[in-house]
Each structure stands twice: as C-alpha cells, then as structure tokens.
Length: 278
Image 1 (spheres, helix red, strand yellow):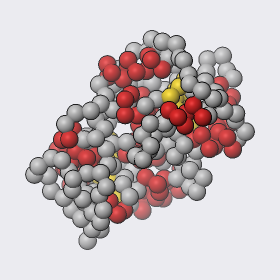
Image 2: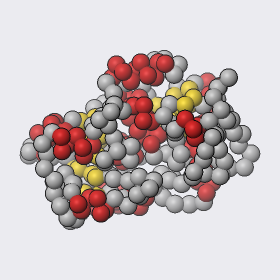
Image 3: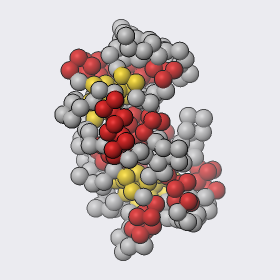
C-alpha cells in the first residue's frame, strides 16, 4: 500500500524527478466553496486546480446527501482534464490541513491511483521554502483509465447497523454531534450508536497530521482496537475522508459512508440521537 502522506521536502524532490506526480490544488471550504481565486493568487508550481463541487461530487436529491460521489466515468473525465496520465502518481493539497484534499485522495485511491496528501498543505510548502506560481493552469489532456471500488464504503443501512458489530465514527464538531446546532442539514444530532471523533483532532497546531503514535493513542481512546470494523461519516462525506486518511496513517482500515449526515437527516424514518453517549 502506498504511503498516505508526503512531506513538502519530499514533494520538492519528486517534482524535480523525471516523472513527477500530478499536483492537485483542492482548496474548498463551506464558506468558500470556489477556490479558483485563491489558486490564481498563488499555488505550488505546476499544480492544477480541482473544484470539489464540480469534479469530486455529483448532485441529486436531498436524500442522496449534499456531496454524493461522482460516477467513475465522470471522475475519469475530470482526471483526464487535469492531465492525469496512466501510471502517474498524484499529490493533493489544500490550505486547511487536508480537510478538502482528502476527498480527492479517497476518490483517486478508490480508483486505483497512487495518491498522497501533502502533510500541512500549502502552508507547509511555503514554510519549507517552496515558491508559488500565479495565474491559471492549462493542463494537457490525460489518458488515465479509472476503475473504482478499492476503498470500502457503507450504504445507509450498513451505517445504521455498524454500531452493533463495529465502530461508527462521526467526524463532525462536537456541538453538531450532540445536536446543539445544525447549520447545514434538516435535523440535528447523530446516527444512533456513533462515537464522536472530530476531524480537527487529527491535526497539530500547524495543520499537520499527528504522528502515527499519537493518532493510535487518539483512536484507542475512542475504543478502537486492531481488527475492528470501522466506518466514518461527517456532514456530507468530505471531511470523513480526512478521518479515513488519519486512520490509515495510524494503521486502521475504515469504510466511508458517503451520504453521511446530510443523507441520514433527509431520509424519513431514520432515528436520531442527541447529546453524549450515556
């Protein structure tokens, strides 16, 4: 299995190699979903901007969730538009600790592409002395062929059952997990039996992933043990991919529930829990 993360220093070495990886800039936030302006103001040289909403998600009914996974065909079309060639590796980054870039990491890993997350993202690149490039990018057309299905995932029914046989992690902020606030979706709370593991807890103060040992301690504190069946969800399946990357870095395998809370809370008949576990 390929490494989950890559340092800025190692990335700089690879970019000087004869066959460099494709760099994808996946800057996206709930309050700034379009990162093209930030990309034009400065990005890692050679990077291609990727729109999370347009390239890394599709759009359907509310019961599908806010960011359903794109079809393999749609993802392949996007990837070729970024210039991705058959056999080429990929490094993804953003400016928020990998929270949005991990969505591209998960999708491309699922489709068979050797993909890593730049640990610390754009700030780590700058801190390591890396320069920036201005303006838009004009990639050539790639020829990659994608075949999805390598990363485990959960349906809504499987997510409902998992707390009875394994561990279901809710990667949202504690106040959303407890149901004290819900800024995006129609109901507040969490899937019954889920345990709260806020995504931000995977990072240190500089926005880099915690060490393998620290992550193992974190997840052990949540009751995870080697061999457990683990699933992860968040609001719409985006930051849950970050949790899965952190779990993988710590030696665990976890399944993504893509619909996440946005699907669950829009589906009639699905029970909701609030507060902390008894």
